[in-house]
Length: 256
Image (cartoon, rainbow, N blue to C red; front, side):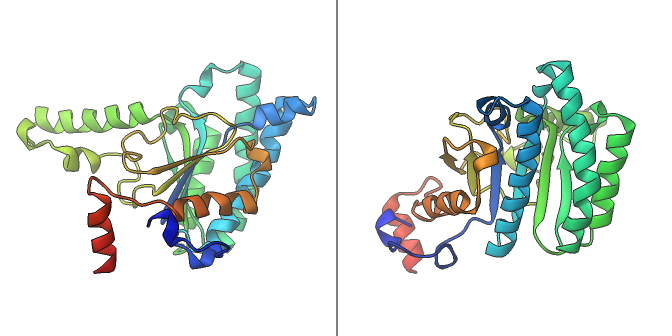
């Protein structure tokens, strides 16, 4: 809806909310460096921010939260930091899955998990199985994920079907390709948030973000709290989503 349609001082509950929020959790390392702490300490604080945002989504009725936890490019970081991140990933899964399950959260992972060691892959599979029946919000974790990988992987599967004679090349369109992508069964993200001051999407959900509203904040991820999340939601509520239509058409549709 147009900005002027959002009442000043309206609570988040009174505003239009996104069904699906996707977040790049940037700034953990810088948060630690600013405090002269090891970068690893920033990632540990970042886990606390994840808990806060998951709770915010649950309370506000947001259906899906997708978090970019580890990109396919993050392997380029110093091996010592990557090792510590993997260790934190394992320990966080062991600690948090029971809490998520108790609160009715369904956990999913997207990305190429074959690069992770057997222990971590087993924990990921177990977490998905344990929470598969939950009907609350969905928490999707992008781990060893890249948007280009996602599209290439989908194209590879379609090419295999073409080679096997199961599919004609001319039958491939955006709808068919889209059905082969990660989280294709979920609503596309309505709101994308990136913390840390950078203003790019960094190979995250390239296909799925085609019509997503983008929101950038200078706050580092460990400092991103409920108030900051609500500010992002208010920004979203004040935007008119046109999807190729004119603003006048959208207003007519909303008034119908």
